[in-house]
Length: 239
Image (cartoon, rainbow, N blue to C red; front, side, top):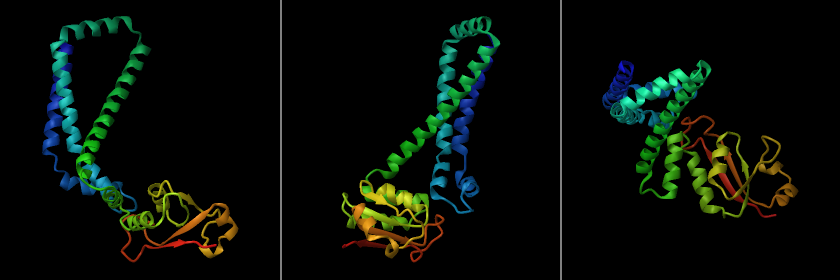
C-alpha cells in the first residue's frame, strides 16, 4: 500500500512541477539559442523557433494530465493495489519487461500527442481568418523561404490548373513549389542543369507542356537571400 501512495504522490508532484515550469519558463531567452543550434548551417528558421515557444504550453498540458491521473489513482487506490499485487504474482519477468517497454512507448506517445494538440491549437488561432494565399505566404515565411512565395503566387495567378509545367530550378525549393502548384502537372527534364533552349520541342509536346517556370538563384539556403537573389520567369510556350 505504501508503494502505491509513493507512486501517486510522485505523479502528483510531477504534475505540479510541470505546470510550474510551464508557467515560469522564459522561452524568449532560451528558444533563440536552441533554435540556432537546431538550424541548418547557423541559419535561424522561424518555424523551429515558433515550435520551441510552444513547449511551456505542452509542459502545462502534461502537468494537468498527471494531476488528473494521480487524483483518479488515489480515488481507486485499493483497486490499483490489488491489481498490482495480482500482476506481480502472476506475471513472469519477461512479460513484466515487455509490459514496462509498452508502458514507456505509451507515455512517449502521450507526449507526442500533447505536442500535436498544442501545435494544432496554436496553428488554428494563428491562421484563423486568413485567406488561402495568406496562409501559404505565412507558411513560406515561417519555413524561411520568403522569396519562393513570389514564384508560387505568380504561378497560381497565371497558370491554369489543367496545365503542364516545365520547372527549371536547381535548388530543393522546387519540391515545395511543386506541392503548392498541384493539381498542375510539374515536369523536370531528365538531364540536370539544362536551360529551356536546350530542351527538345518534341519532348515538350509529348508531355503537353504549355508553361515554363524557371527559377534562378536564391533559396539555396533558407533566409539567405534578398529581393534580387531569387529571379524567376513564367513563360507560355507556343510551338
